[in-house]
Each structure stands twice: as C-alpha cells, then as structure tokens.
Amino acid sequence: MYLWAHSDTSYLSESKSRSRAGGYAFLGDKPKLSIHPDDPLSLPNAPINVLCNFIDAVVLSVQESETGAGYLNGKNPVPIRQALIEMGHPQGPTPIQFNNQCTVGLFKDSVNPKRSKAVGMRFYWLRD
Image (cartoon, rainbow, N blue to C red; front, side, top):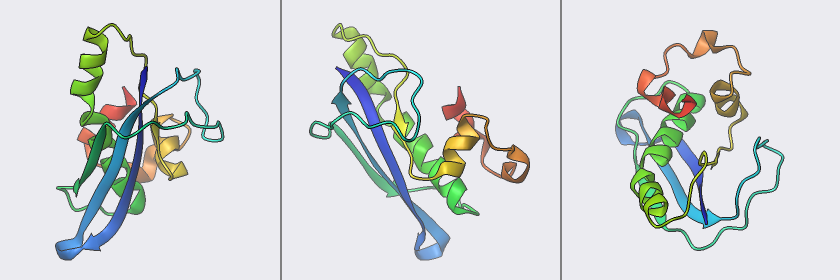
C-alpha cells in the first residue's frame, strides 16, 4: 500500500479574489521512479483523505494557484503517511498528480523560475 495524491484548483473562482484548492489521497500500487506526466496512474481505491478549502493567500496566476493547492494536498495527508509507516507499510516519495505542466516543471527544475519568484516560499516545501 502506497499513498498517492491528486491535486487541482479553481483560480479566482470565489469572492474577494480567492482560489479554491481541492484534491484527494488514496492508496495504490508502488510507484515506479521516476514518474513522468505521461505515465499511467495507479488505479485509485476509495479516497482516504479529501481536501476542499480556500488557499489563504491571494494568488497571482493559475500556476501559483496550482502550486498552493499542491502544497495543501502534500501537507494534508502527512499524518496518514506516518500512520502507514508505523503500521509496517514503508513509503517512498508520495506522487502527487497536477494538471498544470508549468507547476510540474517548477517542482522538477525544468522551468526557469525567473517569472515565478513571486510564488510564496512556503509552497516550495514540495520541491524537497
């Protein structure tokens, strides 16, 4: 059992220029490293963690909104990941699916971050 996550966002769809983050975590097969965007995903079981809330910062672009949603979807299932490890299910890096290639490129260092310097530094937690 390995933890997987899907992340998505809706940019500036709420009042007061707010964006909404959504996503879910599920258990699936062991991911093969390195994961590419074109690789087929693990068939999802029922979600074990669902996220739907506001991004608490005013974001300036769709890419920043996707990054913020990824941050929330990466941070939210950390206790589940720890519980799986304690139950004897070792976990490697948790794959998170994004539907924005710029966000994926930013995290994999394949996009020049010159124009993304305004992205909140706390969102860069996913790069580590």
